[in-house]
Image (cartoon, rainbow, N blue to C red; front, side, top):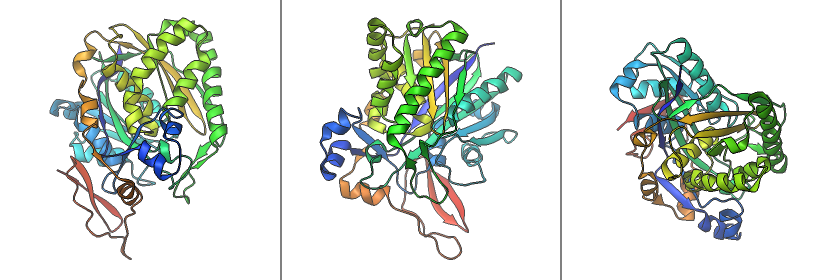
Length: 385
């Protein structure tokens, strides 16, 4: 049975910061960000937007009423959870009006969680071929002002409808995973911002890639030259390029895959790091910006989540996949509201204040398709516009 991605959608906040402005404010060379990181802009989320609203918006952009009546599982991969108990998938299920007899769960393992959700979705559909599974990767990457990670911040969500006989990509059964108990990036419950061992993390990203790819080749007999493109986890775009360079054994393959890689980071460069969704945003960018790909081309994936779990797998493009994409997405991203540094710091680092009952004042009006309206008795109250 062919199982894979039938639809894919994306949502980002309406605000954006140019990293050239950030560089000037932080007394840094703009090329440190635009060349050193291969990043040019970051999406900025206000307090009225979180993983629930962004995930619901990404999913609403692709789902029909028939889909909502057929979906029987909703999976959200995130490391920006808004509740330690209630899954964001439950709130998204309600906001979208998906039929009630569905399973809704949230999965966590740093930036890897949504990839695990994709595998669970495949297993479910293999058992129930007529079902549909909604897999959402939704995250907000937020660090402190003037921190080392500040230029890699971002926010957004990618939604994928996983079905039998998909119209975009068939997911192959060649997954190879690796787990290492390390501390390269982690988020203690008592910390507002993540802890990062930056040099160690980049080393682990590459070493996990090379060792897992060696195991993948031994298991499958596949070589890098067998693939038309490769999508990697993109904490920042330069990291993905270094990963590709680490496993490319010949110049011809590296040149060809580097061309596709540049197409695969068009969106990541102007959105920033969205953790669990970064690899799938890269896939969306590849599909919507490459004119070199064709049906039956094989795409290789490297998903990495600090802590650490990684996975290498592949997918095959389906005939007519281009008909199910959105080719003016970059134009829409370019229409976002551009922020000054003062506006950025005010919006991005604003916190919701609660009174003694756990209730906030009404939050600023937000005309996005979904928004957080207030917190009442410690409950998050969402609205659909």
